[in-house]
Image (cartoon, rainbow, N blue to C red; front, side, top):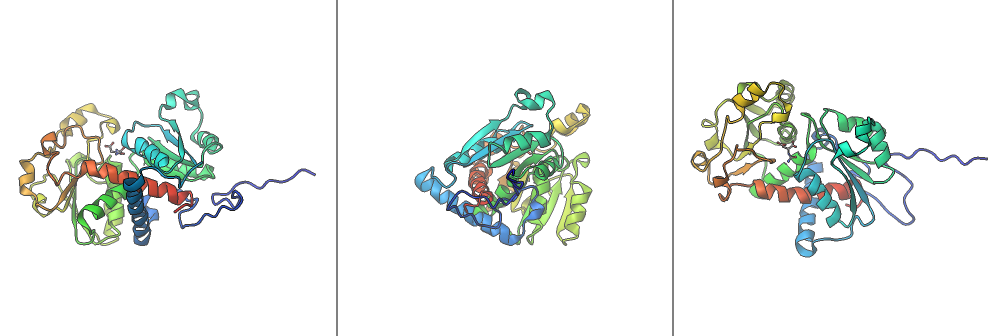
Length: 330
Ligand code: NCD
């Protein structure tokens, strides 16, 4: 009689002999910041902090030895893809990089569900960036291995929001009581969509400063209103800069515009310079998910409040923590 092999589940009971895997994120997808509560965040940041200590002490170690990550990017990326690669390799694992989908079977017309079902035959976890909202959720429906959303169009960028919040906690030691001002392209910027939602778990005041045509989407404002978060909208920065503890600057997302004249009309709406920053507090931070294309002048880079390069380093530790967690080793 033929042996029946049941289908694999997300939380596979079939572990190599003697292996124990635990943790609340083991085998889970990371698709949206909506899946986290404050206790989860404390846990993730605790692990990220330990990762930082380990990297500073010994650089690379074997927590994920033998594990494989598939890095599947349908949109350009420098930081997200290379920090996931560095995170996996610092944990002793390895990476299948697919950044040029035009050289993969995607160019032959393969569907996303088929591509992820292929990669999971070879990898233990898949990091996915895709131009469509909901692409990661769709991939997760088909995959039995964990999917990590590395940006789904103008939707969400949950791992960026986690590293953004870890930056705030590490630099300012608190989140409750802060005034966070988000500046620039709040309509198409997925990082601010995720960060605003994540911050709504705390007692914060949010200011949204943007050109009229790039306002924060109404559904996000509505969602946060229901959680009683104070949110105010502005078109200029001057009024709110002096009270701001975190200034989160974004790039105008040129690739999302249908009309290039519209892009030209807003692309230089705000530029952060040392002069502008004279009006800000001494103890505050300026963040940016990067890349920047002119919205923060390089003259500001040496100011101690410029946290955007440190922010990238915090990202390595958060991504190491997430990989260890979904693979059951944290
Ligand atoms: C951001 C993104 O891809 O959404 N970049 C990143 O992941 N650090 C921001 C951007 O592209 O402007």
